[in-house]
Length: 494
Ligand code: NAD
Image (cartoon, rainbow, N blue to C red; front, side):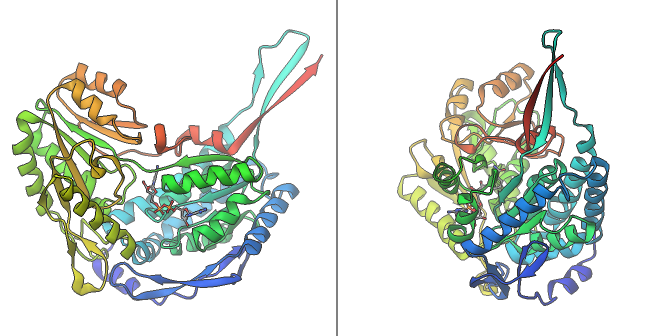
């Protein structure tokens, strides 16, 4: 763990005006640059270049040319592997700088960013560097006079659009398998979290990723992102973000070249506590962490707590106690456990959810308001609302902020019914000492991941993806390689 003084030194480093990376060169965008405001104190850190549709077209053309001439796609797997390992080394060498830059941009608490951002990104590049020369084609069991070969080929140009929470981690989940398979990439980071990904792109060039193979276009979603999603030169679009943007991307695909779209979307994940949980005190602490770390800006956050009625009141009391012990503060302080809300707009949206829940008859038992106003930044008190019913907006819609909805239940069947009663299906948690019940719940819950007697926690070896309107496709693990490769059959008469 770095020292606080090392962090403080990096926290005041000036940030130069940001540019686009197109064809290996850093260039200005043709559209109006955007101010980059730090959620920590509301001050302007720098400006972000905005790529126009023409800039995006140059980036996709560069990626296409790089793919076609084989400068990356045609390299032996061992050569690509060496470059990706070098990139992982560079990310590790610059880990603190990357983490601090990212925190100044998006407000995640530094203790979490250090692990989840450069740490995880470096691990992801290593994982796919190691995987890329262990992926074989197949020989099909055809009749004896025919040879059926199944080749696995890169898809070509990948467009990647990523959100503002965990930009390096989620960016690496897209970039590493895409590059490992030999594709070229055009990356579009979020407006409020582009800085660390632009630095990562610089490191990628230093590591030896050839010019044009990785392009980065920043700017507003409705301009830069839309141009990328409408491009006729993008073969596959991979996306993490909100459901409303995901819907638009599918439309853009239909209006352009029918590019495949893999969507990793939001969640309203149930964390279900049965009275027979092995350790209710530990479950209460974990339930607080599951929603309040990174101020609730975690896709798999346990944002709906379902508690068996017989322990509901005592559990909520323990939960409030655990929450009040969590340190809300400057994200750059090593002791902070709840950082800033990413933007003023996001904060206003979070507060709106609390007001609506109260108007609909739910009970506010903790927090509910803005915090640390004197900083000039955007912070929210960790907020717990009980008696949230399935009809309430807070039960059904993702807040993506530090607001926990609590609902009691009486039976296992009711818990399953409530858990599955939203359009989402990203994650879930179950706390029980009953092994049979745990397995029944894993089967019954419609979610991409079900945690048992823990919440959160995963690594690169297991896939992350949603069901229902939480998305399709998977990031992480060897399964992610499927998104970045095509199967081609060779049918050879012998
Ligand atoms: P968002 O959809 O607003 O933005 C995501 C990205 O899409 C940004 O880069 C944005 O610029 C771009 N974009 C916006 N409008 C666009 C358009 N019209 N065309 C093309 N691109 C456009 O989402 P966000 O607020 O940045 O991220 C929060 C959301 O992401 C939450 O719903 C969260 O649950 C989800 N998320 C999901 C996962 C997962 O793995 N499933 C992980 C993290 C976050």
